Image 1 (cartoon, rainbow, N blue to C red):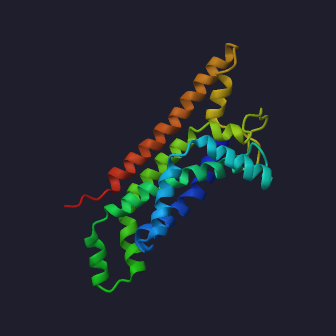
Image 2 (tube, rainbow, N blue to C red; image 1 turned 90 degrees about the horizontal axis):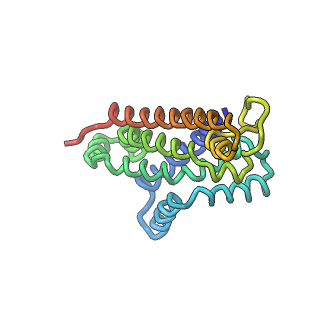
Image 3 (cartoon, rainbow, N blue to C red; image 1 turned 60 degrees about the vertical axis):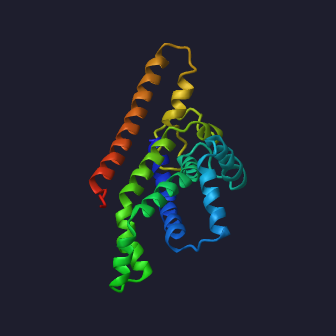
Length: 219
């Protein structure tokens, strides 16, 4: 449940911001030094190690803003910062892949720039965007270092019922239980790994299915 709440918060925060940023940079932003600087930083942020985002969450969300520790809320915000550039990059690539003739045809019949982008370009780019988003979320699901830094290592007695309840996550449990010498933790670790792999396989299958179902072939 902790992993589920974390991924939901990560999706709610990162997906709309990434979509709007990609559309603005690709379709509306003027090409100048400022946008070039933003693009370079987006590519650099996508390569930043995840532990750096964990330190950011620890220093700002917990120390400065005093969010509750060991909660999916903090974990989701931290992972959304990490996932944001990894969604923007495939979204922009999908927007670039839409043929210019689609834009020209819409503009030629009287559509505005806004209507052309949101009625024609974005729907055609959405399959690649969704697949990139799901793959980015699957990668965030397996992150351990940021969650350890924000305190999701405590023993949780009750099943969390909301994103502000203390909880654990699947990758952190694998890390903690693999350190235990008792025989019973071997089975627990193996079961958790199988569950985590199941999540990842399902999410990647959905990404492949969406791409194959909605992808357009341009001649």
